[in-house]
Image (cartoon, rainbow, N blue to C red; front, side, top):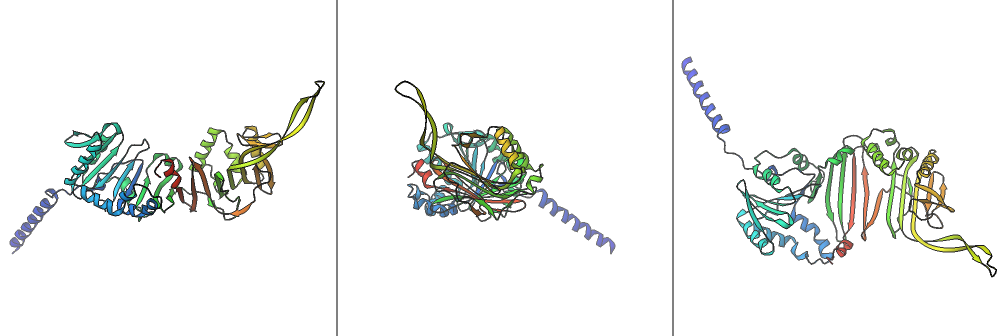
Amino acid sequence: MYRKLLVLFLIAGSLGLVLFVKTFLFEKPKNTRLIDRLPTADFLGRANILELAKESSALLQFNKLSIRDFTTYEFLLGQAKQYGVDFESDSYIFVNENRNWGVLMPLSDSSKVKLGIQRISKYNDLEDSIVGGNKYYFIEKEKSFLHYGKDYLLLYQGTDFLKTLNHVVSAHFGDQLTVWKKFLNQKQFKNEHLVFYANWPELQKYDVEMAMFAHDSDSLSLQLKSYFKKRTPLHIALKSDGVGYKSDLNADHFIDIHLDINEFRKHTQDSVYVQLLKLSKKVGFPFERFLSAWNGDLVYQEGGREIQQQTYIETILDEDFNETEIEKIRYDTVIGFSVLSSFNENAPQFIGKLTQKGLLRRDNKGFRFLFSPLLNFKKTGPIYQYFSAATSPALFTTNLNQVIWKYKGTRYYFKIDNLTRYEVYGTLKIPIKSILKRNKFI
């Protein structure tokens, strides 16, 4: 009886061993996924082309762009099916600081890609080559490359194609890089159709654990929603009762900051503090003196025109050639300029340091910051104001933290939406019409 049981156990064990060997040693390799092929880069992106086309249609139609009929959902879906590209699934973007970039797209039918290559070759000097048994196509002058496999398409522009190609073709199932896992598992901007994740080493200087950006748009502008997360506390909060100016619609530059920095000034080893100190030393700005005196409100406004009355002495000669000095008045047109800041009892030491370094100087009956026009000065309690107009701009209570910056005719607008102990949420708004005009799209 025992012998029979022993034989049965031996047979069962042998069968189990055979199944184990068959399952784990002779198992058919799993197919490499698109996410396994993705190379690392300074900035990683995820995009759904068709959903992005839907989202951007209002902007393209409102501005009557000539390409609007070629970027509709229906047109792009038709083109994707014609050339075997899967636009309904996500594509992945990788961009480096040196401007090398690429895109990996999923394919629905790789046999149709040749039709697209033939079409490209009609309008470009398209060449082909083979390395390691992998064929690729390229336009030498533009440093543009194309390679495709059974279920993926690689587009690349830059100077490091062969290294990127090798990473893509040699990948196996489960080779997905940790940085891509971290990005694609994020809940932040999970439902957005174009998202970027910063893997840029420069951010480590500020102890930034994560930085992400997402696209949004309406008929008038593009919006870039941003999210930053630090490894260590920020030590900065938003003020609810800041003092500032109302934004002047004629201003080319407007910086409006209202922060509670009581904790920040105590943490001199904080990464942000250290980096700001380094930057300030490069331009000779007394950052530590400023921080010890500053109460968190800072407004800078430049743009428009102001008329300033200037008194000067002119020497004239009478009939006997005797010199006589006469005081005269002239009116000069200068750029509108105003600066506001709230200070504590340490303000005189900071102002004195600015004067010592030549960043602020007395001139005639007013003051000048470097190349600013002649400025009047007014102090109202803790509020210090320097302004080019005859009277100071009106003050009002605000909790906004925003920047308006005009560049090549376009007014870019950024605001801090929220601050938590470790996180910063912000939005960059880009009016699109002036950019389209400048580049002759409309």
